[in-house]
Length: 144
Image 1 (cartoon, one colour):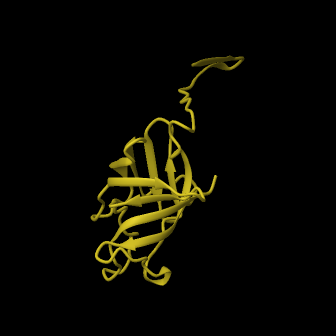
Image 2: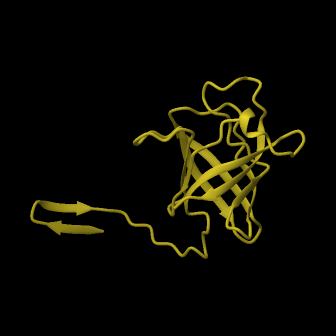
């Protein structure tokens, strides 16, 4: 799309979506992590929760533990099947890419509009203890 202004043309790409077709779009915050071994919630004091996960209408996502201005820890592309509740996050660019990411799993929107990511590991924050448990499930709450 091109907009004409007195100073010249401005080009923009717009993504139009229906929230019923992609309910993931928006800004989310991690509120709980689930241990890979036990499936039990990891205590808050034993983990660093992700403060911002953004799903965009054009199929991109960003993950940031400590948002500051334009900083993003890592991002990439996501694909999902709304009927089968399958999601795949593929990291494509980064400032910090945790070594233990596994982006293939399932998702569920709960009755209180939380997003559960199951069988997925979004990794651990930079400079965290090697004793921090690996999470294979994440509960996110919408913040936008």
